Length: 310
Image (tube, rainbow, N blue to C red):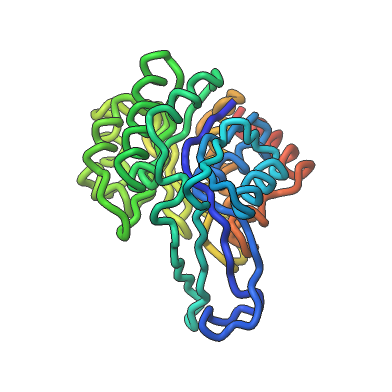
């Protein structure tokens, strides 16, 4: 079972493709980096559980219902009677880009702390997934991420770290650097390599990460695909995307599929191939998880990934 620690929120986005200040209706979704990752991992065949906090409100109930519908266990989600569930809004720009507006200050998940990390560990995970995004939500979440990664490492539980650096949130690169020696799987965006490792050339990124104590690296590069570990050095795999409707959530889908494949014993090459297929589906649909492959298709892709990497 993969346990992810983080925040999920209710997302509103214009249903007619118009900007927020002019739209007449909006569609409602549930999203959050760790929940997106867990949903993809579950679809790829792994058990997945979400550790978080939500408010005692309709949005909190909606988060839990959406997670359960995606097959993600919500038994580790605590309900906070005094804080609300966060919400955010996605704006469609005239050039096709998306701008996201967050209303998460004082949310239930912003009060995550070490007790939540302990609850995640008590579930007996086979792997824990943490991110810099969660650590940046406040002092408590930062402590929770640090405790979960360190305690999991001490117990021999693999740790997956996605830096998920966000310019609008407090910097956490100092903490992430401290966690690198405890990281089994580093799921790194190419644009994050410089701030975290001081280099952005793929071979040097892999070299610098391994020197810092990371077990395995996969470098996500959006439309340029990814680089995965290979006996001869990092190898590039092109993106599988054909149509791009909304790029948000693609990296999470890639990461979830990659981790599920690695837990299933599929080598990095096959895991990265599977990740690109999941990411391609997500970018072709609105919402962060709407484009995940259907269960039967996902199972077929997992089988193909295993055969391709054999």
